[in-house]
Length: 221
Image (cartoon, rainbow, N blue to C red; front, side):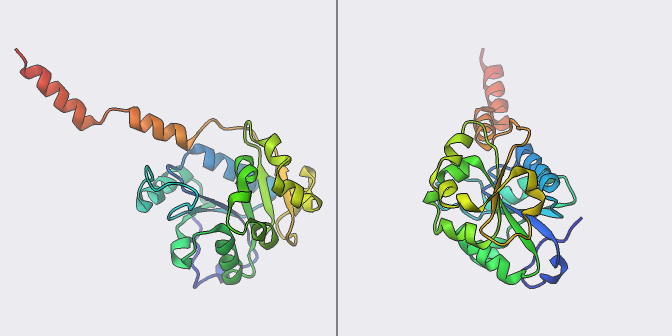
């Protein structure tokens, strides 16, 4: 099991190629694990860090599980020695991806980072704070997401950094390439969805409520 990243002890990650998968992980699921394994294989990464966000600025706090619960969810879902779950953004005191990447590259100067994101996020990244700095700080790997890819590849970010795009056949060269550099890669799709999991959780009856209903039914004449 790899040691979680620590801003004060970055040398153990010297020379490593690390993918960064950020998100709310509300909850984490097999889809996160699937794309992390695909990224390690396609990009030749030594590890993937799951950066569990204290609070995504673009998502409402209503319906967001507590931070500790989401960390636990991610640890249960990871199930792999090279997937490292971390809440390091709380230690870095960062909220926006651009700030997190700047802090990580400063504290881990000999680690080769790659930002991992789905085509859904690429399609709307123009709404992110200082989004161009993300592309200018570390290489970016974008993975296919159903229904989003066409819009993403014709969107503002893809057009702005069109000259920095690397062919999918050379994805293993991405880590260590000077930014800006990005690649779009196709991966076997996984059906898991945090939105669907939350909906299913809301529809599932609470055991305590079910037991109370049974007691009331038994008490009726």
